[in-house]
Length: 235
Image (cartoon, rainbow, N blue to C red; front, side, top):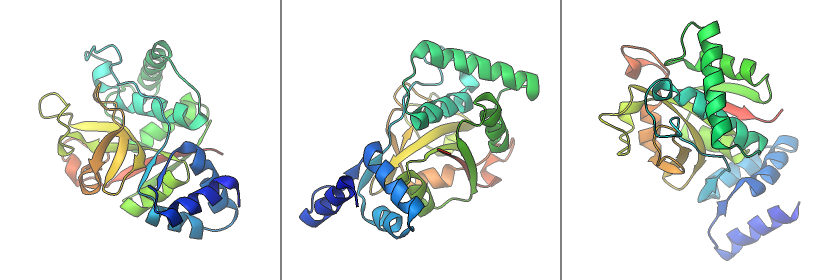
């Protein structure tokens, strides 16, 4: 067992806060991958907070909410999650350029870029980023299931019926459809990088609020679609 894992066990024994970041999680991911999931289950049950590293820009990085930025939550979320997983920095100019290039790719392949489904977002990622990371779609995820993915160091791109989220930073009643990155959890909340607001870095949603709002795209009737998420992981 590595020094990090020994330190984690000591922290539990001494009663210190069980809060972890990306460095510790790389150790946990390797242990769960190469041995069994007992350690992972134990971690998910006992950790009080986990917050993975990921960059943050809103989908309108200059504060201009005209098109295409108004409908660029899918593109922005993929970029945030991708750069978080490959552990590279990204500047605002590159972020903006990538959004515009992804919009162009979708217009060429889908005929539009606004409000794309989970399956289309996976197709976009795998083509635009040339399968740089492993993608996995989980249907009807649970709190425990999402936490287990995060505990393995995986970032999650998730679609929502945006008006069910109740984020006070949204304008008006909020977006009909929205996408963001889930990057951690506390005892009662999921931690996100919500690209739909300039104040979305490390924004927390209660477990039940986030799961209730989790819906793939459909218009009308988004509330009737199943919850689905995209998990990004290293190959």
